[in-house]
Image 1 (cartoon, rainbow, N blue to C red):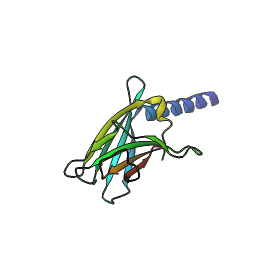
Image 2: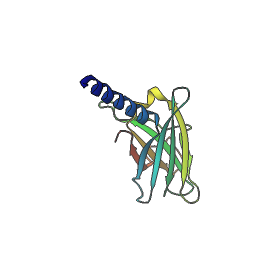
Image 3: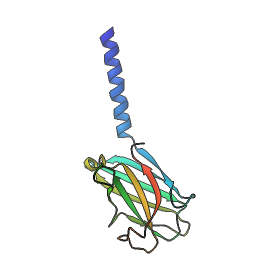
Image 4: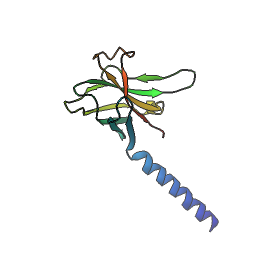
Length: 140
């Protein structure tokens, strides 16, 4: 009887973990530069051992350029992230924007948070002139 209870409990834990791991993870993105800015990043497992990150944002500056940064806050290294090249999107006339990116699943464990930067001068290389528009944490 005692062993059956332990096995049942372990099975429940593993099934719960599998359900959580396989289901999409939602990260709330909160406004930093503007109170009206908000968004959500949805992380989903996809084929070829990849994760898809889908970003939906609103309340941003209309017709503007933004870059998405996945940040690793490892002590001693400072903030390290990816956020150039094809990790950019433009908002529409109402300040709404969306973006989808796929990254290798093995890399995802390295990222602690997601940041959306506004580039008022349309230069994603100029980080000094960028503003932090949205921020969210992958691990709570």
